[in-house]
Length: 318
Image (cartoon, helix red, strand yellow):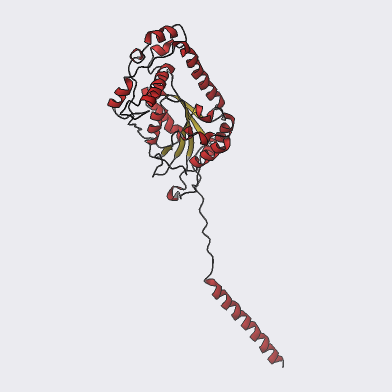
């Protein structure tokens, strides 16, 4: 009896072992293998740069081999007819920079801080597809934002967004505000008249088109001239004050034209590989101001003796 009981116990034990092995083999075909994505290696940067280095994850596509390529966010803050269009074409000439133009020229996108934030999120997430989008790995992405496109109105919230999300600011202004005024008036005139075969163009790519547009000489209201120049100065000063807490660089159109090392400074600022940047745009208004203003004598008389007098003589000098 003892031997029989021992044999039965051994048999039950052996059967249970066999059943477990059979169960394990039957489930082996259904094992779920989870692939863990390897984290991106830490970039070799200074500690202060960390908030400005990003690894965006677009919702509309995969960055694939560019997933671990760090991206810097930027915004060009400027005023109309200050050379920002030309400057942006220079940036977009860089293989790794995407600047998406005047996104907030569309009023609905700047109607409140929520829509502004949603639009910026889409841009910096690399989901904003435009002609500036690159096939190569993007290293810097941004937009051009005019001061009168909700920027000053919502400046406190925008500064907070920039500082929280690590957005760097590129200020671009003109030193000679009189030349800017001529460009503004001429552009406004062409918007109505459309001198180039019934088509309005704010920027041109041929000397012939530039010559046609430059033939128009605006009449400047001498009475309002100084108040208008002061208003532009004050707006510029306010913008610099509002956004002084951001990481920023201040550029002037005349300096960029005269000194191409300024473009090297910008590339260093954005931490992108150095490239020679070119633009196809052709300057419209060239030469002395006396040949560009119809009532030159009135303008000259109004500005003489004021701190704006240097605008009468300076071209690309401070």
